[in-house]
Length: 322
Image 1 (cartoon, helix red, strand yellow):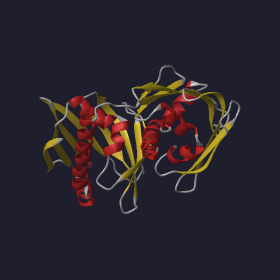
Image 2 (cartoon, rainbow, N blue to C red):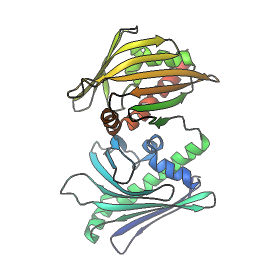
Image 3 (cartoon, rainbow, N blue to C red):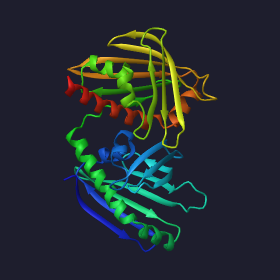
Image 4 (cartoon, rainbow, N blue to C red):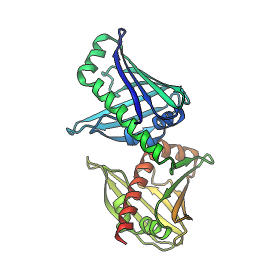
């Protein structure tokens, strides 16, 4: 079992306090709480899904996301990080982002207990009435279910300890992402470049690929358009500059919406073999530090994790079909 002790208490001073002991080391529990690759797997009560718009996990940073309830209702969320002490403490202010909505403060503590971790999550409200409103809304059940999902995620991470996604910022204009896929290099390159396959994995779960065009030759153009549920679209385009199947791909990339249409990034993707698997390296070179930072602040890390998870699922399907 990933968790052995669970408790929730209604405090006397406008508090709700959750306590849980997880059968996992403190560093891993903290990482599961702060690393996008893990966080997207467990955040929220049972039956809920999320759209993560932006996250900046640092003191003063913000996290904006929308929770989608099983009944179809959307719940906007805004988290303002106040303090982050790695492996020990995360403190933040939470609200819906609406001015009329009162916020509340959350403190999450991570304490070592041998090889296990005691997690204490304290929610502090402005008044007893505000606290009671959250209780009536179902925060006790929702909080317990969320920690259940964290426990399940920790068990999965422990059983499969290799983290295959990583994001790095080697310079002030670069973003570098890596991911190890359990598929041969030829198959990964095929899924990465064939528009028939790209249309099935490129983008988020709640987006539809309405245009996916690609002329895979040096000087050829590619174009993709993602559509949100509300009808808004995100068009991307570029030109292939170098193609070395199944090893390397270089192309430009433009988010074709003003005022970003004149901001050209150079994307270099390489695929290397690792014992029957394939490691992908994607390097995005922006023209300015402002463009690089804007890309990061758009929530691209969350999007990359979700998108590459979708590619992994497609690769498994393609492997079974061969």
